[in-house]
Length: 207
Image 1 (tube, rainbow, N blue to C red):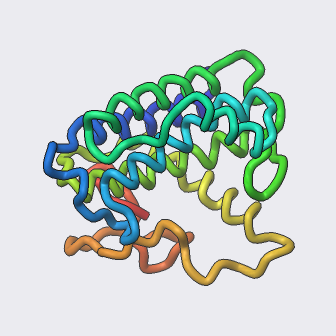
Image 2: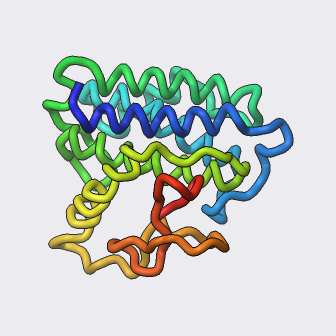
């Protein structure tokens, strides 16, 4: 297994651990993504990972969306539906990315056709960022996996570069900037100055 796939699986396991730690009364709590509750954030990841298999199979976005809609109902709003929905979606996306030849082709995402490796990079970064979101929201005590945190820095720079050059001006803000900042001082990201970055000792931090 290549290093990127291993990083993806580690990030996915970190998000899974946090999903399983959500208490019955925590699904409607707010998260650092101000527009999302814990249920919204988890549902977003469920939907995102449901799409991985169809996209890696070569379906265009409209066809992939139709395949997902035909197979699954939207995830619910509490743990009774969200936890098993996430477990299934995570298992399916992990299997899709680990399949032989999965990373040799291209997939269609919102900005067009991209190499499957780029898609995996963006999915990995999304998992780390949202694992932090979820951990902060529910008070999860464990830190993010150090190897995955270390790996996201070059991935994040590559994603910023490919999304904003050469046809777009540089972003004025970073998508991952938390709307509620932790009280404890933490290092700042070289990609988003002034924004906290994850480290192995400060549980659930974010860059």
